[in-house]
Structures are given as structure tokens and as C-alpha cells.
Length: 524
Image (tube, rainbow, N blue to C red; front, side, top):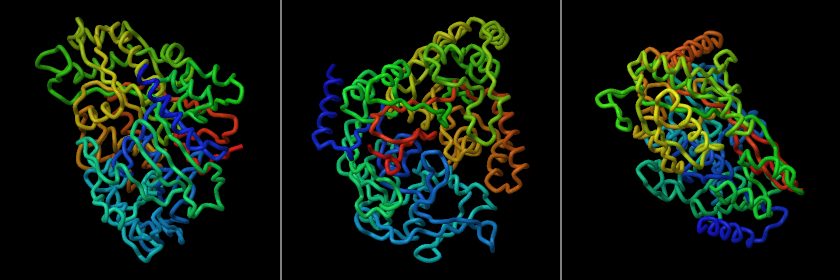
């Protein structure tokens, strides 16, 4: 009750600013984790950053490339290992400083640094250099045909501003560090930060000097962003008119919202798959009742768990039809996905037989770590899987917590069994492999909490960044997927479906990335 009252007060505070046709009051389940644009590779964090900062290239609301701070880009005619980007001229940061190639060099090198959660995207870049104020060259370790796809969430910072505010180094989020850049911003984007209270309210206002004033609708002149974790409270805020737009209409409330006067629900498949990871690499794990060994290290146990999960039941009962059962952790948008790999099956008896064969006929217990404010019905999905796994003797203790506490468990290697969702902004399997399959190290595998390590597969993953023969590249991608599927590296659940709820005065289509960019919105 206290939480609900507190959130209602925060919403009312937002309306006091003077809501008009230009003010968009926006809510979703969880907040951005930080304002440092290179500290976290996480959807809600990127979404807020996209309003204030800009990359060289963005994807529009349909997922198509669109020039942002670069007007054009192409491989060099003189060197296949070089990409040339021509920068937009006349662009200024929010504090009035000019945007130049020097800022691009600084931003890319910052995003490549050890603390950055974005560095896996930039592994192939060996040097970035300013040719002049408005031309930048990216030198790659071999020709990289998909480099532009890796840059759509790589935000440009003002070098001088970062240096003046002791923010040259990327914030260490997992260590609990707070920096000037983690709570302030100075981008080139369409909106400027007015105020921020993490997990309470963030207010943005239109950047009157934005370079795109004549190119985009920019009907939204003020944004009041209020994270509302509680689903009922979030829907109530939309129904009452306290907010205009929510990204995550609970599946049980879709019809209620859609049938309400003045409200609209728009639905579309998301470029994201929800799955479970298992610590298969450790000799022994802490969060189980098996002494001296790791049941998850046995592929038969992992396959048994995979067979125990009834994805169709999750779709019908938990998701109310709003999901697509998945047999692979790549969504259909992604190069490398195949319909054959995406097939699913449930077979409890076969699962029991595999458990018996692996020596765990009497079962075992284990803890499942799950977020409760990140994905659609995340905790409810975990609860349903607890009952399914019990049918093969895997007794699960569920520990659900907010994403800010959940994600570090994965990146710090402190969980043995966990839920994760993965979107693929590059639309290519290499992105998945770099973060989730490659051996965990300084420049790859940062979200691989499974302990899986295969030098031969690592070599194939690295080769994808410089393979220009696309048929050969696709064949390598398939070889990697064959290994991932054979090892049952992850337990795919479903491809997520998006349900955006909004006032009928809000005009937008649903982005497959679940990243509304409000400069594209219209307000009627």
C-alpha cells in the first residue's frame, strides 16, 4: 500500500508540471540502470539514453537503419579494413559545444574500455581516427561487413564534458560506483535532462537547438518518465489518464485496456528471446543439495530440464497467448535463426529417463534466480517452470528480485540457474555468440554465466567479424548453433511479444526493439 501511494504521488507530481498535448507521461515496469551511456547493455537503459544521446546510426521505429550523427558510411575504396563515416555538420551538445570527430574517437575508445558493457560490439575495431572535424575512420581487424549494425546503441559523448566532470572512465555499475555521468547527461539528442530520481521519476524537455528540428515530428516537447513495477498500478495509471503511454501492458489486462474509451493497445513481435541459463562449467555449485559435484555439468540433466518445460502451457496460461514458444535463443528476426532449430517438445517420461541415466533418478534441489521487473511476466514464468521441473525431480527454490540486483548475479558469476532475456540489435547471430557463448573474458562473453568454454567455438565466433564471404560466414554461424543446441547450453522459453498501451492521442508504431524514440512520435 505504501508503494502504491508513493507511486501515485510521483505520478501526480509529474502532472503538476503542466501536462498538455506536448507532454508525454510515460511509464514502464523498470527504470534505466544508469545514465552513463556505455555502462550497461540493457534495453530500458538504452531507451532512456536514446532520448538524450545519439549514435552515429540509429534504427527507426520499424527497425530500419537511419542516419543519425553520421550522414553516410561505407568501406574505404583504398583499404577493405577501413570504414569511413562522414559526420553531420552543425550539431551541438546540450551545453552548446560543437560535436566533432574528436568526440567520436573519445566515445568509441571509452566504449571499448574494460568497464564498458558495450565492448563486445567493438572487438573488431583496432583503431578509430579523426581524419578531420567531420570525418572518422574505423580500422578493423580484417574486413567487417556488419560493423554499422554494431553501432546503433553506441552513444556519442562530449570529450571535454567528460574530462571536466571526471567521467572519462566508464562507471562500474556492478561495484556500486556512482559518477557524474551516471546521474547527468550532455548529449546531442532531441531531449535534455531536467531532473532525475532513479526508480521514481525522470523529466526531459525538448532540445530547442536539436539538429533534426525540421526532419522529425518532435510533437513531444516534454517527457515525464515514471517507472511503475506493480502491474495493477501501472494499468490503473493508464486507465485514469495519469500516464499516456506504457510499454508493458500486462497480458491479463490487454482487452481491458483496448476496450477502454480513448485508449489503444498495439501489439508486435519483439526482437527478444527469454530463456534460462545454467552453470554447467563449475565442478561443484553452491545453490544445490548435491555435494561434491555439479548436476548441471551433465548434458543429460540439461536436456531433461529442457524436455520438462511445457512452453505451450506457458504461452496459454501465463502469457495469455502473447508469446511464441522458442527452441533457440535467437528470435526469428536474426540472421542464423531457422525454423527447424526453433521447434520445441515436452516429454516428461523422456526427461525422467535422462535424469535416471545421469544418476539423478532421485532428483536434486537448486535455486533459480529470476528478475521481477524486467520481462513480460518474468516472475510468473519462473513460478510455472518451478512446477514443471518438479515433475522430473528437480526441486527449485525461486528467488525473484529487481533487475538491478538480478543482473549482477549473472555478470559476476554468482548464480547457477537464472533467467535472462536477450534482444539482438544487430539482427545477426554474432551478437548472441559474443555475449552468451564465447568463453567469458575481458572482451567477450560478459553475459555467459554458463561457464561454457570451447576454444574451437571461440575461434569460429571471432572469425565472424572479418568474414566477407557471406555464404561461408552463414555456414560458420550454423556450425556454432549446432554446438549450442547439441550441448543444451540454454533453455529457451519463448520469443517475447510486445503490447504497448497508449492514449489515442499518441501516434506511434511498436518498435521490435521495444525502444520508443519519442522524436518520431506524434501527438494528436
